Length: 93
Image (tube, rainbow, N blue to C red; front, side, top):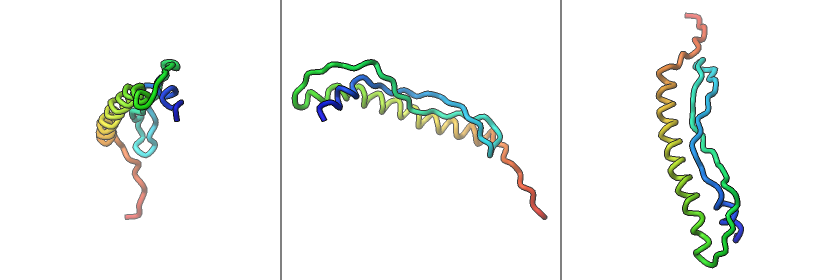
């Protein structure tokens, strides 16, 4: 429990764009994913609530980056819907 702030204190989150082929729509689509980066271990000597202080920047970066990922993925989804060319199935009409 006491090591959690030490481990998490060196992590920050950021949105990363990835592309993938959507075979249903026959297009290359994009989406955002949440990536984690470490800035090295931070040595912290703390007692009581002071151990939570290093978690504030981590939580803030996760919240901000997560919000960007959600908003960006909504935009990419809308973009994909406009460009989607669904496969036509043959039917006996």
